[in-house]
Length: 504
Image 1 (cartoon, one colour):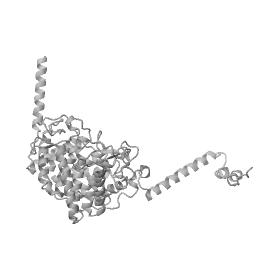
Image 2 (cartoon, rainbow, N blue to C red; image 1 turned 120 degrees about the vertical axis):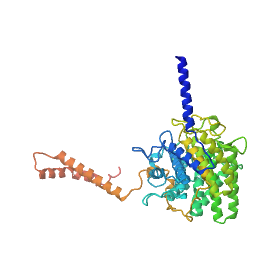
Image 3 (tube, one colour; image 1 turned 180 degrees about the vertical axis):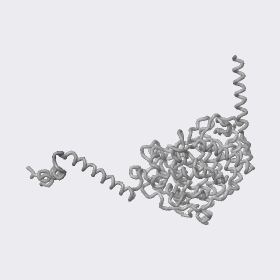
Image 4 (tube, rainbow, N blue to C red; image 1 turned 90 degrees about the horizontal axis):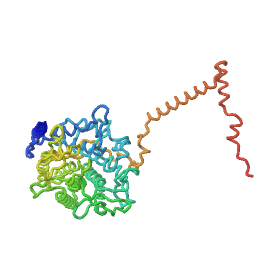
């Protein structure tokens, strides 16, 4: 009997291996067709973990344990999928998810996210909207918020939160005082703001956005969150005047600054600011040098593969961190469009990483879900699956089509998204949700309130008449009795209007 059990176990193991081998991806990073075919299945498996488009679910939200910000990152990934492949399969649910989360003021501050939303969270939704504008993603109906205006609204609300009273500037991690991290200023909040400001400057040509990008960069370097070697550290507390820097390095921090710096280089070039072009060129190179040094692992330059160095080698990446390589892949590829001198270097790193990533996609019930550990493995699945792992694999595979992808547009080069420089208002970044959680009062609201008031008063009056009614009297007699009962009496009126007694 025991021998039969051993045989059955062995057969089951062989069947599992066979099942996985059937679905093992054969990715040719030199072939557009191969990349698209692999990306199509990666995208399908990614979207299978999103149920916001299903009846009874909320568009734009991922199920537990994923936070709100990662759903915004997912929307950005699905925009990327369309941008690279031209496949419109997920465009409608992407548009639906983005628009459902804009909030009452169209700035990605929905009231039901006040317990989780930080500046970085809002920033990821804003950057997704910015990508939609840059790639000419399908525009919403005219009576709906527009992509460019949404990105501008996020920028405006965050600029209003710039905190010069602590650490001489910078954004706090959290927007609301009751959230853990309100007294922490972190690099990713600044990175999202810098990234958005830089891209808005390039898209609109408005120097105000560029000024804010410069201000953010100068603050980051001045406070030491970016050092002379272009290492980007996690953040510090306001209680210590941002001197107690947390030395952890995460890939999405440097990635967001890398793309923003590339956008500033292109903006400066278009504006004819030669000195600034050279300055941002140097910064792009510095950030890319650090990216390759810290976030790519390999024996030599020809086999370096992306790694989330702070947590991946020791298998301690949390749900958020499991997605970080998706954004580094996304932003490295996009950097080559505005900083073309980086293309050859970035291309090799992304090709190596894509090959390694799909070797991890042999898990899950379907035998092709992706794990996290791309570097230093022989293709053995690491036993993990999730939105972050799947999104990272899809993004790095898609990134290998960046050379043939269209150049991002601007207002002057075919951009169709409608903007609003004043979007988001000026309510100090809406840090007090009591003022805005129910949205602005409209004429319809006022009419509804008046109607409800009328109904309540009429009902109350009828109840009082009923209480004072005497069924032995006529209606007229009852009304006279009721009126005399509720009318002010001389003593009551006199007490209200009589002057105070003289002092004793």
